[in-house]
Image 1 (spheres, helix red, strand yellow):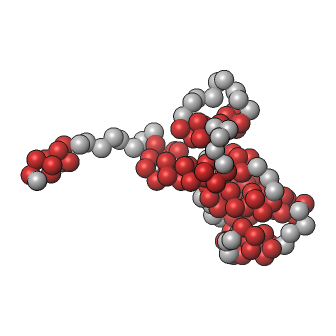
Image 2 (cartoon, rainbow, N blue to C red):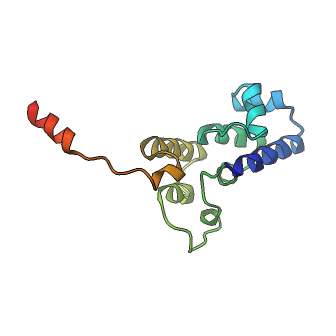
Image 3 (cartoon, helix red, strand yellow):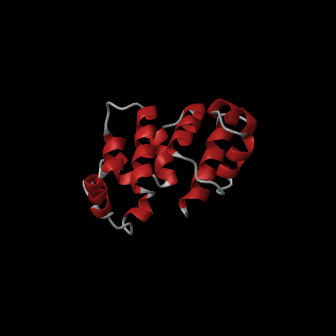
Length: 137
């Protein structure tokens, strides 16, 4: 979670540069004022969809917020060949997708595999029970 304070400070800086109050940005982004305040203070980690809404309100790149939130690897955005290709990288790099489509795809993917740091430790599920259930039907 070391990226969250960086994200919050960045959001606050961008909001102040845009001369928006916390309430104004919260209204534009369609989120509550207290929730936005918690994000800016690094207490809450927003979803990709919320980040996308905030990005639109601030008129900044949603991808830059994804990087600061730890959702995307910064090397992917700079097209670093050393960056390991993965699903999130492919979503970020696809020029055909809109910001909204990227946010939805990231959320769907993470709903299946969990957050990035949990993926490596999650064991694949055995399919034995499923087959047994199918045979019973």
